[in-house]
Length: 241
Ligand SMILES: Nc1ncnc2c1ncn2[C@@H]1O[C@H](COP(=O)(O)OP(=O)(O)OP(=O)(O)O)[C@@H](O)[C@H]1O
Ligand SMILES: [Mg+2]
Image (cartoon, rainbow, N blue to C red; front, top):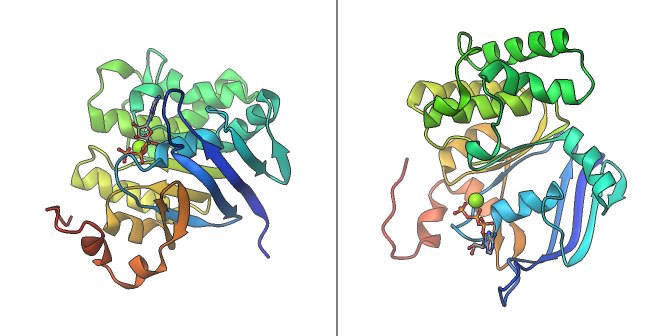
């Protein structure tokens, strides 16, 4: 059996003031080398799940195991955040330094890398993502798609053991989209990718899961039948990308 990177068991989370839990007795395992797509309707709890996995929200029930150890307190999740890279759904939650290079170098420096080395690392990652020349740009003035890619750079610069990508293709033009696909296909890092773009998930993940009533369900059927999602939408109109 492959080594488990993360394991969630019986996880339950209810937002304060809500009556029903969004995540409800959820079980989920991410093995070494896993590449999992997560496709589920708006509001089904995908982002909430990622935030629970990073310890940004505290579950009311359930157990989270990461890298072989049960984690609960802030100290445990600090370690999780060093090894798991979350790309936030909203890039503005990710970026906070004045310039692109500072933003991307921040993570490696925070992991103990010297300033010079961290900046070199940041340049490398920016170059891999086709963002050479962006180093001195002012982060908050970037376009939506540019921010998305810089946010990804901040995550990749930390050399995570597991990537959690929350709708990474939002706002990307076609060329940038293709570059993202190429970068992910070339990377061996384990990943869970949230997206509403079925074709994207087919290109960058090798199994599909969904979230139904607060639980993860394996969606093998989606993988076999490209347009199975049409039927899930019932009569509601929607687009195929
Ligand atoms: N801070 C919050 N307080 C209260 N309810 C929240 C909060 N954040 C999210 N929710 C609710 O929890 C549910 C799940 O939200 P979540 O963002 O996890 O969904 P999602 O699957 O990521 O959706 P999307 O595809 O639109 O990103 C939604 O009904 C949302 O309104
Ligand atoms: Mg979301």
